[in-house]
Length: 275
Image 1 (cartoon, one colour):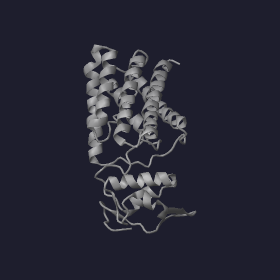
Image 2 (cartoon, helix red, strand yellow):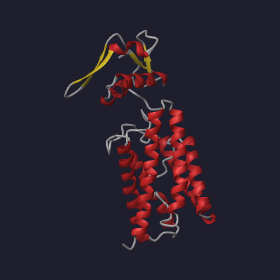
Image 3 (cartoon, helix red, strand yellow):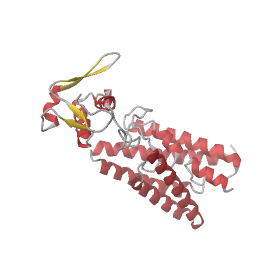
């Protein structure tokens, strides 16, 4: 009971933060196929949400919502050591509840493991820089009042979505939670642009069970062709013209793609041949 105020402040704030991030990402995916507009919508919602949440909870718990921020506060003696576990546990649990609720709102599985990988030294470096910048912004604006801190953090994270290749997670609690959503709020398909893809990677993407519906399969196949991952070498000018010739058949143990009158060539990767 002694620390319930701090726990609840961090728990509720973290929960709403992830609900905003993931929920706005799913809504954006539902409304448009343009990835730029999706990211813009997700960015605006996240920045606005951060400003409001920090302003509201700053007098309750300090509105950290981030284990790295709490750790930095502890190291600078602005947070007592016995409160650190309370803050971090509240943040992680709040973020997990937030992703579960956002998934539920949009009729996704409450917890669904993301298949969207995000790896590479450039992503790691991007997160280090983004996190360092966030801590710098917070401590640089701390003496100017909660509204200034809220504004600075909200604008910085809004910018971070666009100047970092990782979209500036800068928060391990949020990163953990976002592994449990298969949405824009999860991670980018195929990982990073420089990843080497092989045949299994591409086939796994275009034959995944969740894309059995022809329209979804068409959208994702078209997307990979537009990205330069796949090349349509079957002579069709329009992907939709041959959808009736492309089917995916499932049995109990394996996924077997049935490709009739159509070939895809992998443009980049360990292999470069039609399959």
